[in-house]
Amino acid sequence: MTITETTPNLTASPGSTTPVAGQAWTARLWGILAVLCVVMFLDGLDVSMVGVALPSIGTELGLDTTSLQWIINGYVLGFGGLLLLGGRTADLLGRRNVFLVALAVFAVASLVGGLVDNGTLLIVTRFVKGLAAAFTAPTAMSILTTTFKEGPARNRALSIFSVFGASGYSSGLILGGLLTSAGWRWTFLMPVPFAVATLVAAVVLIPRDRPADTGGHDIVGAVTLVAGMMLAVYTVVSAPARGWADPLTLGLFALAAVLLASFVLVEKRIAHPLVRLSILRVGAIVRANLSIIALFGSYLSFQFMVTIFLQSGLGWSPLKMAMALLPAGLIVAFGSPFVGRLVDRFGTPRMIIAALGSLSLGYLWFLFVGSDQPTYAVAILPSVILLGFGFTFGFTSIMAQATSGVDDSEQGLASGLVQTSMQVGAALVLALTTALVTAGSHTGAGTASFDQFRPGLILVTGVALLGLAITVWPLIRGRRYSAVPEASRA
Image 1 (cartoon, rainbow, N blue to C red):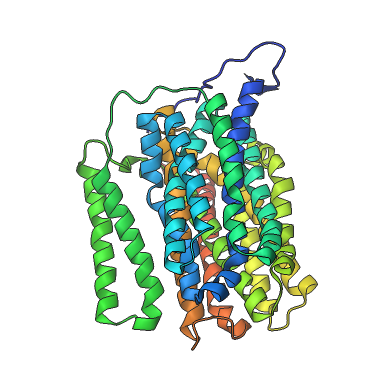
Image 2: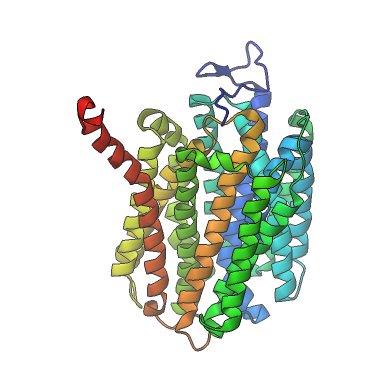
């Protein structure tokens, strides 16, 4: 992998700058960052608002828990399935052009999602919206990482970027609770005017960039990857009802494995692969991708279970449930600006360890203290606080590690790769969690008692602990190695 120092695309002008580790931030530079942050805000807003609205959607459209998780996973799979193609497309066709087109599609899909009357059509619109986000997200990230120098300037920009994601998430919880009380459709329509306004600002502020001189689109790789991942998730979700040992279940798993293996073979042989597999030889990048799976996969699945448990199981209103989870979003929103400095001081591995350790403790606390009649201050609030700190420390640190040292020409690939891991990993963890939660339910609602959610809580705890172990092990091994005398090593 080519290791270079990323250079900014914008030049500074005297008298309108704020120096950040050698890079002057002009008013236009701040404007570009604001546009990218609003897109991040919309993504967080959309996920949290729809999550709050799930029980109401299920009641009105007659969807059970298994179907409801497809409203989340439809978006996540569309998002994760084409992220790599989105990042590569941005490198080849120009980041600005791809960003503008995808943001326009995102706005249209949001509008249509708020108007449909059928559960299947709603899931389809979520999938299309995820496809659009698959191009906006890596493009926004690559615009950011090619605009800000690697080091303190980029870490600061990533921290601000994360703040808006957290603000969108925390705002979405409150807005989701308020809007769901008026009608769940408003949670789909709310992002539309923001997306349109951001599109106009992006046209004005984001400078034109030159597409890559060489390259191509790996359509076969994209098709085999998306088909393999979607089939794997569908099989996991449908297996409890059909039976894990059912011939059709086993056949679908085998077909998914064949498709994913075909993707790997295609990437090895094609001239312009979707994923340059040699990038996976860099240990820090691989660990960053595994860490984001543990972080986001466990966090999204936990939110899914708690949302249904509090509203359908305990009868809480959407607004009450949103207020209960709000502290996590506030911690991320107010804590993220300081993470860049912490990364500069302690390094990304230690920050990721702190993040996954905090998440693991939060899940363990809720697992052992939670009950059918939980006390908020004792059973729920401590877990919410620990999860808030975990996400605060983890997201920025992992993104910084995943894109550090990557040449500008492959920032789209690196950004798309880590976000693909985040979305697809979350989809698989959520599918397994849903399968475990609904396995013992006769109604498929998954709301009988706290014990029904216990297997899912054990799963998300295990995922977080596994991610923690993967990050800790290289540091332990390095210390053991350094403790051996040089003569003995020789």
